[in-house]
Length: 397
Image (cartoon, rainbow, N blue to C red):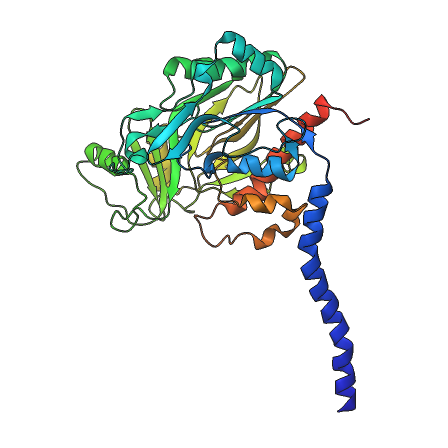
């Protein structure tokens, strides 16, 4: 009996130490973050799809900027609610538009001098039915504001001429961007859009999944004699000419989700995981390999029926997810997906090295969860891009 009591008493200090470590670790991480020096890196952020003041469509970028202590001037960290160009919700269905469209040539020139980098996070825009509460957000409607503008593109061209960093992502090439601007972007940066976009849906059953766009189902039925015989999960592909292709799990797919596969460079230098599921919007683009490289590619694991469906519509089963040009002339990255929109908490960015605890941040068993994408791919990728570029601007002494 005495021996058991002695062993129990010996264990108590050990458990106390473990408990103390668990309690102190977050505090030490927070202190370390506050003690980390701030670094000025001016980024012109463009976001035209801001439905709420949470800034969801560019929050992932703000998380990285905050975690790495990058500032918009000598001492101020970025504010996700105000430090961007685009659409600003004000409440009660009121809004303000503060995009680059109001800039003249001289002002764009000045901005391209002042900014170290530019990032087009989302130019899809805001539509009447999703903004005004009386509308049906799942139906297409007239646009309030959106699309890559001539001024947006002019800034990117100026940044390219000045050998600076440019990041853009889905869907700066798709509707409502004008075709002439799309073509100019493609020719300038060596990225061509095929006209196809796609997304994973966890159910194609219209009685269950209320997230299915009504226009998607309607267009498919119009093109297939009124039929919509899908109930499982899968991938919907939409062309700019309104063609709809549905790949249903088991019927057309071996695996329900598209996956991204990183190259050796993507893993070794940019810290991306080798294989990553992707459950949000993406576009199908092709790069000019004379000027660009591919760091990661999507793969749709289709069975024989699915491969036949893809071939019928001229859709590849594998296509680029991340395109890069890293040279002395300029740095350019194209993310072929809605990469910046992830459900992350900005508060966690104030804990230095918080990614060491990333395993507690998500549960990969849910096919729709996107937190793992942020922690395993977006965070290391964008952090490395910004760190590399900052090093060229202000080399270490």
